[in-house]
Image 1: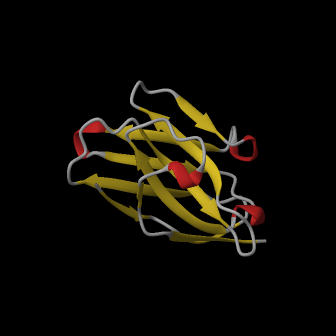
Image 2: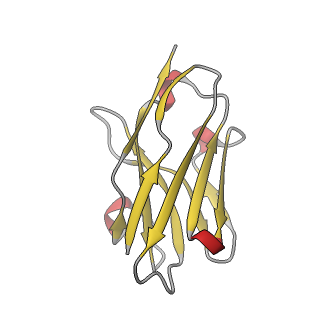
Length: 120
């Protein structure tokens, strides 16, 4: 499974961005896809994931501001980020797995990171 992330950039606080993660390769039975982020000097943390049944999980810090969705026909997951804050600045990574991972190190597939920078 290969994951291609895109959509990062520089935005002012209060602005919006949409990240995309396109999956390719042997993608059958992928159970979960989503986004983690890592800021300098910090551990990689959950942002949002979407499961094969459509259920979603969000970090408390992004609830109400970020929305994760998927387009099955394109094997793509999106992360719409609204009301961005300076503290959302990080490298955002797309992740996927066939199981039920609970920690970043349990994911088998990762995309390259995409930088999101929010200016205050």
